[in-house]
Amino acid sequence: MVDDFESIQQFLDEKVLQFNQPKFIEDDPIQIPHLFSQKEDIEIAAFLTATIAWGKRQMIIKNSLKIVDLLDQQPYDFIINHSETDLKPLSSFVHRTFNGVDLSYFIKSLKHIYTKYGGLEQVFSKYADEEGYQNAIHQFKQHFFELPHPLRTTKHVSDPRKGSAAKRINMFLRWMVRKDQAGVDFGIWNSLSPALLSCPLDVHSGRVARKLGLLTRRQNDAKALCELDCTLRTLDPKDPVKYDFALFGLGVHEEEW
Image (cartoon, rainbow, N blue to C red; front, side):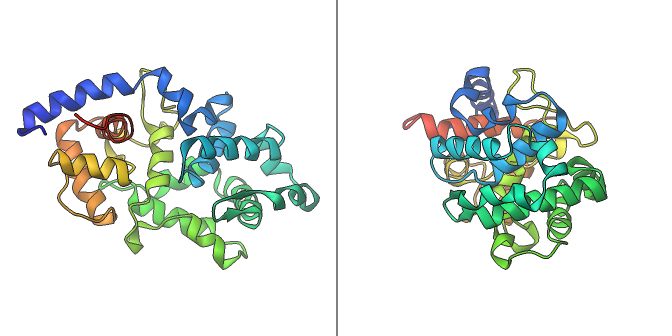
Protein backbone atom coordinates (compact mmCIF):
# COMPACT_ATOMS: atom_id res chain seq x y z
CA MET A 1 0.00 0.00 0.00
CA VAL A 2 1.35 3.44 -0.95
CA ASP A 3 0.58 5.94 1.78
CA ASP A 4 1.24 9.44 0.42
CA PHE A 5 0.26 11.35 -2.71
CA GLU A 6 3.77 11.90 -4.07
CA SER A 7 4.67 8.25 -3.63
CA ILE A 8 1.40 7.18 -5.25
CA GLN A 9 2.15 9.29 -8.31
CA GLN A 10 5.71 7.99 -8.61
CA PHE A 11 4.51 4.40 -8.18
CA LEU A 12 1.76 4.76 -10.77
CA ASP A 13 4.03 6.57 -13.25
CA GLU A 14 6.42 3.62 -13.06
CA LYS A 15 3.57 1.19 -13.70
CA VAL A 16 2.33 3.24 -16.66
CA LEU A 17 5.77 2.92 -18.25
CA GLN A 18 5.74 -0.81 -17.50
CA PHE A 19 2.32 -1.58 -19.00
CA ASN A 20 1.85 1.14 -21.64
CA GLN A 21 4.07 -0.69 -24.12
CA PRO A 22 3.46 -2.26 -27.57
CA LYS A 23 3.55 -5.74 -26.00
CA PHE A 24 0.33 -4.78 -24.17
CA ILE A 25 -1.45 -5.04 -27.53
CA GLU A 26 -0.69 -8.75 -27.88
CA ASP A 27 -3.10 -9.85 -25.14
CA ASP A 28 -5.62 -7.01 -25.23
CA PRO A 29 -8.75 -6.42 -27.35
CA ILE A 30 -7.15 -3.22 -28.66
CA GLN A 31 -5.30 -5.51 -31.08
CA ILE A 32 -8.48 -5.70 -33.19
CA PRO A 33 -8.56 -2.06 -34.39
CA HIS A 34 -4.78 -2.31 -34.82
CA LEU A 35 -5.50 -4.62 -37.76
CA PHE A 36 -6.61 -1.57 -39.78
CA SER A 37 -5.09 1.64 -41.11
CA GLN A 38 -8.10 3.65 -42.37
CA LYS A 39 -9.61 5.92 -39.73
CA GLU A 40 -13.18 4.71 -40.19
CA ASP A 41 -12.15 1.05 -40.11
CA ILE A 42 -10.16 1.64 -36.93
CA GLU A 43 -12.94 3.43 -35.07
CA ILE A 44 -15.67 0.99 -36.15
CA ALA A 45 -13.58 -2.05 -35.23
CA ALA A 46 -12.73 -0.35 -31.93
CA PHE A 47 -16.35 0.51 -31.16
CA LEU A 48 -17.63 -2.99 -31.87
CA THR A 49 -14.77 -4.59 -29.95
CA ALA A 50 -15.32 -2.31 -26.96
CA THR A 51 -19.04 -3.12 -27.06
CA ILE A 52 -18.39 -6.79 -26.32
CA ALA A 53 -15.44 -6.18 -23.98
CA TRP A 54 -16.63 -8.01 -20.92
CA GLY A 55 -15.60 -11.45 -19.78
CA LYS A 56 -12.31 -13.17 -20.50
CA ARG A 57 -10.02 -11.17 -22.76
CA GLN A 58 -9.18 -14.12 -25.00
CA MET A 59 -12.87 -14.71 -25.67
CA ILE A 60 -13.39 -11.00 -26.37
CA ILE A 61 -10.56 -11.11 -28.89
CA LYS A 62 -11.83 -14.33 -30.49
CA ASN A 63 -15.36 -13.00 -30.93
CA SER A 64 -14.19 -9.59 -32.10
CA LEU A 65 -12.23 -11.32 -34.84
CA LYS A 66 -15.44 -13.13 -35.76
CA ILE A 67 -17.18 -9.78 -36.14
CA VAL A 68 -14.39 -8.53 -38.38
CA ASP A 69 -14.75 -11.65 -40.52
CA LEU A 70 -18.52 -11.18 -40.71
CA LEU A 71 -17.87 -7.65 -41.98
CA ASP A 72 -15.64 -9.05 -44.75
CA GLN A 73 -12.52 -7.52 -43.14
CA GLN A 74 -13.76 -4.11 -44.32
CA PRO A 75 -15.88 -2.66 -41.48
CA TYR A 76 -16.58 0.78 -42.95
CA ASP A 77 -17.32 -0.45 -46.46
CA PHE A 78 -19.62 -3.16 -45.11
CA ILE A 79 -21.53 -0.72 -42.90
CA ILE A 80 -22.03 1.88 -45.60
CA ASN A 81 -22.92 -0.51 -48.42
CA HIS A 82 -24.59 -3.50 -46.73
CA SER A 83 -27.96 -4.88 -47.77
CA GLU A 84 -30.47 -6.84 -45.71
CA THR A 85 -29.14 -9.99 -47.34
CA ASP A 86 -25.64 -9.14 -46.12
CA LEU A 87 -26.92 -9.03 -42.55
CA LYS A 88 -28.26 -12.59 -42.53
CA PRO A 89 -24.92 -14.28 -41.70
CA LEU A 90 -24.68 -12.06 -38.62
CA SER A 91 -27.60 -13.89 -37.02
CA SER A 92 -25.34 -16.67 -35.76
CA PHE A 93 -23.09 -14.36 -33.74
CA VAL A 94 -23.11 -14.68 -29.94
CA HIS A 95 -20.93 -13.13 -27.25
CA ARG A 96 -22.50 -13.62 -23.85
CA THR A 97 -25.75 -11.59 -24.03
CA PHE A 98 -24.78 -9.72 -27.21
CA ASN A 99 -26.16 -11.68 -30.17
CA GLY A 100 -26.82 -11.46 -33.90
CA VAL A 101 -29.95 -9.37 -33.41
CA ASP A 102 -27.90 -6.79 -31.52
CA LEU A 103 -25.04 -6.89 -34.01
CA SER A 104 -27.38 -6.36 -36.97
CA TYR A 105 -28.89 -3.31 -35.33
CA PHE A 106 -25.44 -1.95 -34.52
CA ILE A 107 -24.50 -2.21 -38.20
CA LYS A 108 -27.66 -0.37 -39.27
CA SER A 109 -27.21 2.30 -36.63
CA LEU A 110 -23.56 2.87 -37.47
CA LYS A 111 -24.56 3.49 -41.08
CA HIS A 112 -27.10 6.01 -39.76
CA ILE A 113 -24.41 7.69 -37.64
CA TYR A 114 -22.03 8.02 -40.59
CA THR A 115 -24.54 9.07 -43.22
CA LYS A 116 -26.62 11.46 -41.09
CA TYR A 117 -24.11 12.83 -38.59
CA GLY A 118 -20.76 12.44 -40.32
CA GLY A 119 -19.38 9.69 -38.13
CA LEU A 120 -18.65 8.64 -34.57
CA GLU A 121 -16.15 11.38 -33.81
CA GLN A 122 -18.53 14.10 -34.96
CA VAL A 123 -21.28 12.94 -32.60
CA PHE A 124 -19.04 12.76 -29.54
CA SER A 125 -17.29 16.07 -30.27
CA LYS A 126 -20.62 17.85 -30.76
CA TYR A 127 -21.75 17.07 -27.22
CA ALA A 128 -18.46 17.19 -25.34
CA ASP A 129 -18.33 19.79 -22.56
CA GLU A 130 -15.75 21.17 -20.15
CA GLU A 131 -16.52 18.50 -17.56
CA GLY A 132 -15.69 15.57 -19.84
CA TYR A 133 -17.44 13.18 -22.18
CA GLN A 134 -20.17 11.63 -20.05
CA ASN A 135 -22.87 13.90 -21.47
CA ALA A 136 -21.56 13.13 -24.95
CA ILE A 137 -21.96 9.41 -24.22
CA HIS A 138 -25.57 10.03 -23.15
CA GLN A 139 -26.31 12.05 -26.30
CA PHE A 140 -24.57 9.46 -28.48
CA LYS A 141 -26.87 6.79 -27.12
CA GLN A 142 -29.91 8.90 -28.01
CA HIS A 143 -28.72 9.19 -31.62
CA PHE A 144 -27.63 5.56 -31.77
CA PHE A 145 -31.16 4.35 -31.04
CA GLU A 146 -33.04 6.76 -33.30
CA LEU A 147 -33.88 3.95 -35.70
CA PRO A 148 -36.51 1.32 -34.84
CA HIS A 149 -34.67 -1.10 -32.60
CA PRO A 150 -35.11 -4.14 -30.35
CA LEU A 151 -35.52 -3.05 -26.74
CA ARG A 152 -32.99 -5.69 -25.68
CA THR A 153 -30.25 -4.00 -27.69
CA THR A 154 -30.33 -0.72 -25.73
CA LYS A 155 -28.59 -2.34 -22.75
CA HIS A 156 -25.44 -2.72 -24.83
CA VAL A 157 -24.77 1.02 -24.87
CA SER A 158 -24.31 2.42 -21.37
CA ASP A 159 -25.73 5.74 -20.18
CA PRO A 160 -23.91 7.75 -17.48
CA ARG A 161 -27.11 9.65 -16.73
CA LYS A 162 -28.57 6.38 -15.50
CA GLY A 163 -25.68 5.87 -13.11
CA SER A 164 -23.41 3.75 -15.27
CA ALA A 165 -19.63 4.14 -15.23
CA ALA A 166 -19.85 3.35 -18.97
CA LYS A 167 -16.60 1.41 -18.81
CA ARG A 168 -16.62 0.11 -22.37
CA ILE A 169 -17.40 3.40 -24.09
CA ASN A 170 -14.85 5.24 -21.96
CA MET A 171 -12.31 2.62 -22.99
CA PHE A 172 -13.27 3.15 -26.64
CA LEU A 173 -12.83 6.90 -26.19
CA ARG A 174 -9.41 6.35 -24.61
CA TRP A 175 -8.38 4.34 -27.65
CA MET A 176 -9.56 7.01 -30.07
CA VAL A 177 -8.56 10.21 -28.28
CA ARG A 178 -5.47 9.58 -26.16
CA LYS A 179 -2.17 10.53 -27.81
CA ASP A 180 0.09 7.59 -27.08
CA GLN A 181 3.81 7.78 -27.78
CA ALA A 182 4.06 4.03 -27.14
CA GLY A 183 1.71 3.22 -30.02
CA VAL A 184 -1.02 1.47 -28.02
CA ASP A 185 -3.83 4.03 -28.08
CA PHE A 186 -4.57 5.56 -31.48
CA GLY A 187 -5.17 9.27 -30.82
CA ILE A 188 -6.91 9.74 -34.18
CA TRP A 189 -9.75 11.94 -32.88
CA ASN A 190 -8.16 15.37 -32.83
CA SER A 191 -11.39 17.23 -32.01
CA LEU A 192 -11.44 15.84 -28.46
CA SER A 193 -8.97 16.49 -25.65
CA PRO A 194 -7.22 13.65 -23.78
CA ALA A 195 -7.40 15.82 -20.67
CA LEU A 196 -11.16 15.22 -20.43
CA LEU A 197 -11.12 11.45 -20.83
CA SER A 198 -12.43 9.22 -18.05
CA CYS A 199 -10.77 6.05 -16.80
CA PRO A 200 -12.55 2.86 -17.89
CA LEU A 201 -13.66 1.89 -14.39
CA ASP A 202 -14.18 -1.83 -13.79
CA VAL A 203 -13.69 -4.39 -11.06
CA HIS A 204 -9.91 -4.48 -11.59
CA SER A 205 -9.15 -0.76 -11.80
CA GLY A 206 -11.68 -0.01 -9.05
CA ARG A 207 -10.12 -2.49 -6.65
CA VAL A 208 -6.62 -1.13 -7.20
CA ALA A 209 -7.77 2.50 -6.99
CA ARG A 210 -9.40 1.82 -3.62
CA LYS A 211 -6.36 -0.02 -2.35
CA LEU A 212 -4.22 2.99 -3.21
CA GLY A 213 -6.68 5.46 -1.69
CA LEU A 214 -7.52 7.06 -5.03
CA LEU A 215 -11.19 6.11 -4.73
CA THR A 216 -13.46 5.81 -1.70
CA ARG A 217 -16.87 5.01 -3.20
CA ARG A 218 -17.57 1.29 -3.11
CA GLN A 219 -19.73 0.93 -6.22
CA ASN A 220 -18.20 1.09 -9.70
CA ASP A 221 -20.77 3.59 -10.96
CA ALA A 222 -20.99 7.10 -12.44
CA LYS A 223 -20.34 8.77 -9.07
CA ALA A 224 -17.25 6.65 -8.51
CA LEU A 225 -16.04 7.53 -12.00
CA CYS A 226 -16.41 11.23 -11.25
CA GLU A 227 -14.40 10.81 -8.04
CA LEU A 228 -11.66 8.87 -9.81
CA ASP A 229 -11.59 11.42 -12.65
CA CYS A 230 -10.90 14.21 -10.16
CA THR A 231 -8.06 12.27 -8.55
CA LEU A 232 -6.38 11.20 -11.79
CA ARG A 233 -6.68 14.69 -13.29
CA THR A 234 -4.79 15.97 -10.25
CA LEU A 235 -2.02 13.46 -10.91
CA ASP A 236 -1.79 14.41 -14.61
CA PRO A 237 -4.09 17.18 -15.90
CA LYS A 238 -3.09 16.59 -19.55
CA ASP A 239 -3.22 12.79 -19.73
CA PRO A 240 -5.14 11.43 -16.73
CA VAL A 241 -6.24 8.14 -18.27
CA LYS A 242 -2.70 6.98 -18.86
CA TYR A 243 -3.15 5.65 -15.33
CA ASP A 244 -5.68 3.16 -16.65
CA PHE A 245 -2.67 1.11 -17.75
CA ALA A 246 -1.32 1.13 -14.20
CA LEU A 247 -4.62 0.40 -12.46
CA PHE A 248 -5.67 -2.31 -14.91
CA GLY A 249 -2.20 -3.82 -15.12
CA LEU A 250 -1.83 -4.01 -11.36
CA GLY A 251 -5.29 -5.51 -11.03
CA VAL A 252 -4.79 -8.20 -13.65
CA HIS A 253 -1.10 -8.99 -13.66
CA GLU A 254 0.20 -8.46 -10.15
CA GLU A 255 -1.42 -10.32 -7.30
CA GLU A 256 0.77 -8.76 -4.61
CA TRP A 257 2.40 -5.31 -4.72
